[in-house]
Image 1 (cartoon, one colour):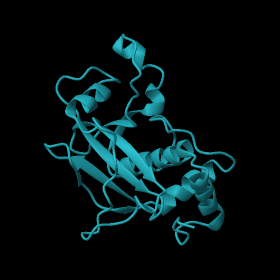
Image 2 (tube, one colour; image 1 turned 45 degrees about the vertical axis):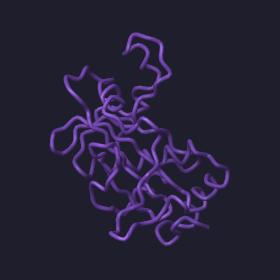
Image 3 (spheres, helix red, strand yellow; image 1 turned 120 degrees about the horizontal axis):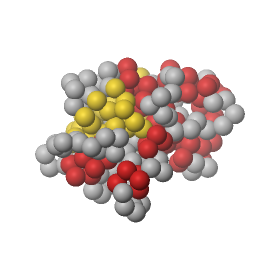
Image 4 (cartoon, helix red, strand yellow; image 1 turned 60 degrees about the vertical axis):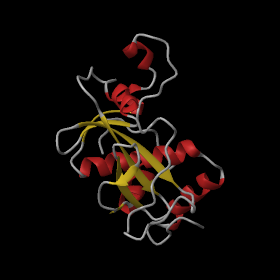
Length: 192
């Protein structure tokens, strides 16, 4: 079993491990997003919209056909910047771990997700944006039960942009809230 059993009760760990073995990436991703919205709120981010809030409305917002998906979160950061945050949950031992400095291993992102153009279009979905929108990535490591925020440098490379936080309590809260099914994607309007 790869999941940090010391952090969660056996039954909860077994659910995550079952999703990992079944390759249920929707359940794992939704759990990661549910944890991420709690962490972001605790860190002082104001979540304006989530992917779940905007899903299905992108074509209407852009007034053109598109296969584009919204970003996981559109937020106002603690310093007042409009940002998009991409939640990346992992249950893979290969993608889990820490570097020499104690930071989580950098999350992997799809090609193009590290560009200002990408984040600006998605940041403007809830409301038109005047200027650029920065992107951030919140890694949710469900093996170590830790989360850390990453930011992009000018070349589009990720770097650790915040402290590592224990998320075991958040994972327990989410899994207990949805005892009989995988959690849904979160909404900015959910009562956390």
